[in-house]
Length: 256
Picture (tube, rainbow, N blue to C red):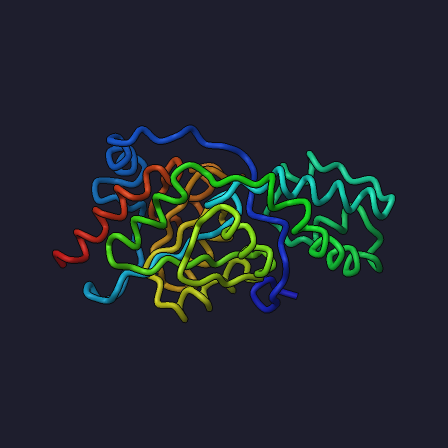
Protein backbone atom coordinates (compact mmCIF):
# COMPACT_ATOMS: atom_id res chain seq x y z
CA UNK A 1 0.00 0.00 0.00
CA UNK A 2 1.38 3.43 -0.87
CA UNK A 3 2.50 5.55 2.06
CA UNK A 4 0.28 8.46 1.08
CA UNK A 5 -2.86 6.36 1.21
CA UNK A 6 -2.47 5.13 4.74
CA UNK A 7 -2.16 6.91 8.06
CA UNK A 8 0.56 5.08 9.98
CA UNK A 9 2.86 5.57 12.93
CA UNK A 10 6.53 6.18 12.34
CA UNK A 11 9.43 5.83 14.70
CA UNK A 12 10.63 9.30 13.74
CA UNK A 13 12.30 11.24 10.99
CA UNK A 14 16.00 10.83 11.22
CA UNK A 15 19.26 10.86 13.11
CA UNK A 16 22.42 12.86 13.00
CA UNK A 17 23.42 16.34 14.10
CA UNK A 18 24.30 19.49 12.21
CA UNK A 19 26.67 22.11 13.57
CA UNK A 20 24.93 25.02 15.31
CA UNK A 21 24.25 28.16 13.30
CA UNK A 22 26.24 31.33 13.89
CA UNK A 23 23.53 33.90 14.50
CA UNK A 24 24.33 36.83 12.23
CA UNK A 25 25.71 34.55 9.52
CA UNK A 26 22.48 32.62 9.12
CA UNK A 27 20.97 34.60 6.28
CA UNK A 28 24.28 34.75 4.42
CA UNK A 29 24.77 30.99 4.72
CA UNK A 30 21.20 30.33 3.58
CA UNK A 31 21.85 32.42 0.49
CA UNK A 32 25.02 30.47 -0.25
CA UNK A 33 23.02 27.25 -0.01
CA UNK A 34 20.11 28.44 -2.06
CA UNK A 35 21.09 31.24 -4.42
CA UNK A 36 20.84 35.02 -4.18
CA UNK A 37 17.14 35.00 -3.29
CA UNK A 38 17.34 32.24 -0.69
CA UNK A 39 15.73 29.61 -2.91
CA UNK A 40 17.16 26.54 -4.60
CA UNK A 41 15.68 25.94 -8.03
CA UNK A 42 12.16 26.98 -8.93
CA UNK A 43 10.06 27.47 -5.81
CA UNK A 44 6.31 26.94 -5.65
CA UNK A 45 4.37 30.19 -5.28
CA UNK A 46 3.82 30.69 -1.52
CA UNK A 47 0.32 32.05 -2.04
CA UNK A 48 -1.23 35.51 -2.05
CA UNK A 49 1.17 37.94 -0.37
CA UNK A 50 -1.33 39.09 2.24
CA UNK A 51 -2.61 35.67 3.27
CA UNK A 52 -1.87 35.19 7.00
CA UNK A 53 1.39 33.39 7.62
CA UNK A 54 1.20 29.70 8.55
CA UNK A 55 4.35 27.62 8.97
CA UNK A 56 4.36 23.85 9.39
CA UNK A 57 7.13 21.98 11.19
CA UNK A 58 8.04 18.32 11.24
CA UNK A 59 8.74 16.94 14.72
CA UNK A 60 11.44 14.24 14.98
CA UNK A 61 14.91 15.56 14.17
CA UNK A 62 13.45 18.91 13.10
CA UNK A 63 12.10 20.30 16.38
CA UNK A 64 13.25 17.52 18.72
CA UNK A 65 16.06 14.99 19.04
CA UNK A 66 14.02 11.91 19.82
CA UNK A 67 16.83 9.39 19.28
CA UNK A 68 17.46 8.75 23.01
CA UNK A 69 13.74 8.32 23.65
CA UNK A 70 13.13 6.05 20.69
CA UNK A 71 16.11 3.91 21.69
CA UNK A 72 14.73 3.62 25.24
CA UNK A 73 11.29 2.61 23.95
CA UNK A 74 12.83 -0.10 21.78
CA UNK A 75 14.88 -1.39 24.70
CA UNK A 76 11.69 -1.66 26.75
CA UNK A 77 9.93 -3.50 23.92
CA UNK A 78 12.88 -5.86 23.57
CA UNK A 79 12.96 -6.59 27.30
CA UNK A 80 9.24 -7.28 27.40
CA UNK A 81 9.05 -9.48 24.29
CA UNK A 82 12.41 -11.20 24.56
CA UNK A 83 13.17 -10.20 20.97
CA UNK A 84 16.68 -8.86 20.44
CA UNK A 85 16.58 -5.34 18.93
CA UNK A 86 19.69 -3.31 18.16
CA UNK A 87 18.46 0.10 19.28
CA UNK A 88 21.60 1.86 18.03
CA UNK A 89 20.91 0.52 14.55
CA UNK A 90 17.26 1.51 14.82
CA UNK A 91 17.99 5.16 15.62
CA UNK A 92 20.60 5.36 12.88
CA UNK A 93 17.84 4.90 10.29
CA UNK A 94 14.85 6.69 11.81
CA UNK A 95 12.40 7.78 9.16
CA UNK A 96 10.57 4.84 7.53
CA UNK A 97 7.28 3.58 9.00
CA UNK A 98 7.45 1.99 12.43
CA UNK A 99 6.12 -1.25 10.98
CA UNK A 100 8.97 -1.38 8.48
CA UNK A 101 11.52 -1.15 11.27
CA UNK A 102 9.71 -3.71 13.40
CA UNK A 103 9.69 -6.10 10.44
CA UNK A 104 13.48 -6.34 10.80
CA UNK A 105 13.01 -7.84 14.27
CA UNK A 106 9.59 -9.53 14.47
CA UNK A 107 7.83 -12.14 12.31
CA UNK A 108 5.33 -10.56 9.93
CA UNK A 109 2.36 -11.88 11.90
CA UNK A 110 3.60 -10.12 15.06
CA UNK A 111 4.49 -6.71 13.62
CA UNK A 112 1.09 -5.05 14.17
CA UNK A 113 0.91 -6.14 17.81
CA UNK A 114 4.50 -5.06 18.39
CA UNK A 115 3.68 -1.64 16.96
CA UNK A 116 0.69 -1.27 19.25
CA UNK A 117 2.77 -2.23 22.26
CA UNK A 118 5.58 0.14 21.25
CA UNK A 119 3.13 3.04 21.18
CA UNK A 120 1.85 2.05 24.63
CA UNK A 121 5.37 1.88 26.07
CA UNK A 122 6.47 5.11 24.44
CA UNK A 123 5.16 7.69 26.96
CA UNK A 124 6.92 6.08 29.93
CA UNK A 125 10.25 5.62 28.16
CA UNK A 126 10.67 8.12 25.32
CA UNK A 127 9.41 11.48 26.54
CA UNK A 128 11.87 12.35 29.31
CA UNK A 129 15.11 11.56 27.39
CA UNK A 130 14.10 13.61 24.35
CA UNK A 131 15.40 17.17 23.98
CA UNK A 132 14.53 20.19 21.86
CA UNK A 133 16.90 20.85 18.98
CA UNK A 134 18.77 24.15 18.81
CA UNK A 135 16.56 26.92 17.52
CA UNK A 136 13.30 25.00 17.85
CA UNK A 137 11.62 27.21 20.42
CA UNK A 138 12.90 30.41 18.80
CA UNK A 139 11.61 29.30 15.41
CA UNK A 140 8.09 28.68 16.68
CA UNK A 141 8.23 31.96 18.61
CA UNK A 142 9.32 33.86 15.49
CA UNK A 143 6.29 32.64 13.56
CA UNK A 144 4.10 34.03 16.32
CA UNK A 145 6.08 37.28 16.52
CA UNK A 146 5.31 37.82 12.84
CA UNK A 147 1.60 37.33 13.50
CA UNK A 148 1.50 33.82 12.08
CA UNK A 149 0.40 30.34 13.13
CA UNK A 150 2.82 27.47 13.78
CA UNK A 151 1.61 23.92 13.25
CA UNK A 152 3.31 20.55 13.65
CA UNK A 153 2.63 17.88 11.03
CA UNK A 154 4.36 14.62 11.89
CA UNK A 155 4.43 10.94 11.12
CA UNK A 156 4.45 10.18 14.83
CA UNK A 157 1.39 8.86 16.68
CA UNK A 158 -0.37 12.12 17.51
CA UNK A 159 -0.91 11.63 21.28
CA UNK A 160 2.80 10.89 21.73
CA UNK A 161 3.76 13.88 19.58
CA UNK A 162 1.68 16.12 21.84
CA UNK A 163 3.36 14.66 24.93
CA UNK A 164 6.79 15.56 23.53
CA UNK A 165 5.77 19.12 22.78
CA UNK A 166 4.13 19.66 26.17
CA UNK A 167 7.15 18.22 27.99
CA UNK A 168 9.52 20.55 26.14
CA UNK A 169 7.34 23.64 26.38
CA UNK A 170 6.86 24.00 22.63
CA UNK A 171 3.33 25.22 21.96
CA UNK A 172 2.19 25.10 18.33
CA UNK A 173 -1.28 26.18 17.29
CA UNK A 174 -2.13 22.70 16.00
CA UNK A 175 -0.62 19.21 15.91
CA UNK A 176 -1.47 16.64 13.25
CA UNK A 177 0.00 13.14 13.48
CA UNK A 178 0.23 9.87 11.57
CA UNK A 179 1.00 11.48 8.22
CA UNK A 180 4.04 10.75 6.08
CA UNK A 181 5.45 12.22 2.88
CA UNK A 182 2.75 13.26 0.38
CA UNK A 183 0.01 12.61 2.94
CA UNK A 184 1.40 15.50 5.00
CA UNK A 185 0.28 17.74 2.16
CA UNK A 186 -3.35 17.14 3.14
CA UNK A 187 -2.91 18.73 6.57
CA UNK A 188 -0.68 21.50 5.25
CA UNK A 189 -3.29 22.47 2.66
CA UNK A 190 -6.08 22.29 5.25
CA UNK A 191 -4.22 24.74 7.49
CA UNK A 192 -3.15 27.00 4.62
CA UNK A 193 0.58 26.57 5.25
CA UNK A 194 2.87 28.53 2.96
CA UNK A 195 6.04 26.94 4.40
CA UNK A 196 6.87 23.45 5.67
CA UNK A 197 10.10 22.81 7.56
CA UNK A 198 11.56 19.31 7.85
CA UNK A 199 14.73 17.25 7.88
CA UNK A 200 13.81 14.37 5.57
CA UNK A 201 13.18 13.97 1.85
CA UNK A 202 9.72 12.77 2.87
CA UNK A 203 9.11 16.23 4.33
CA UNK A 204 10.13 17.81 1.04
CA UNK A 205 7.61 15.58 -0.71
CA UNK A 206 4.93 16.66 1.75
CA UNK A 207 5.64 20.34 1.14
CA UNK A 208 5.55 19.82 -2.61
CA UNK A 209 2.24 17.97 -2.38
CA UNK A 210 0.79 20.96 -0.53
CA UNK A 211 2.23 23.56 -2.90
CA UNK A 212 4.16 24.99 0.06
CA UNK A 213 7.72 26.22 0.17
CA UNK A 214 10.03 23.44 1.36
CA UNK A 215 12.58 24.55 3.94
CA UNK A 216 14.92 21.71 4.87
CA UNK A 217 17.32 21.44 7.80
CA UNK A 218 20.26 19.05 7.85
CA UNK A 219 19.70 17.85 11.42
CA UNK A 220 18.26 14.51 10.29
CA UNK A 221 19.45 11.61 8.15
CA UNK A 222 19.45 13.49 4.83
CA UNK A 223 22.31 15.76 3.83
CA UNK A 224 21.98 19.00 1.91
CA UNK A 225 22.61 17.35 -1.45
CA UNK A 226 19.86 14.76 -0.88
CA UNK A 227 17.42 17.42 0.27
CA UNK A 228 18.09 19.63 -2.73
CA UNK A 229 17.79 16.68 -5.10
CA UNK A 230 14.39 15.90 -3.58
CA UNK A 231 13.26 19.45 -4.38
CA UNK A 232 13.89 21.49 -1.24
CA UNK A 233 13.63 25.21 -1.99
CA UNK A 234 15.79 26.28 0.95
CA UNK A 235 18.41 24.29 2.89
CA UNK A 236 19.56 25.48 6.31
CA UNK A 237 22.11 23.93 8.64
CA UNK A 238 19.61 23.89 11.51
CA UNK A 239 16.74 25.85 13.02
CA UNK A 240 19.01 28.51 14.53
CA UNK A 241 19.09 29.94 10.99
CA UNK A 242 15.33 29.84 10.51
CA UNK A 243 14.12 33.02 12.29
CA UNK A 244 16.33 35.28 10.15
CA UNK A 245 15.27 33.45 7.01
CA UNK A 246 11.59 33.76 7.96
CA UNK A 247 11.87 37.50 8.59
CA UNK A 248 13.35 37.95 5.12
CA UNK A 249 10.65 35.73 3.61
CA UNK A 250 7.89 37.79 5.24
CA UNK A 251 9.52 41.05 4.15
CA UNK A 252 9.54 39.77 0.56
CA UNK A 253 5.87 38.78 0.83
CA UNK A 254 4.94 42.19 2.20
CA UNK A 255 6.79 43.92 -0.62
CA UNK A 256 5.22 41.79 -3.35
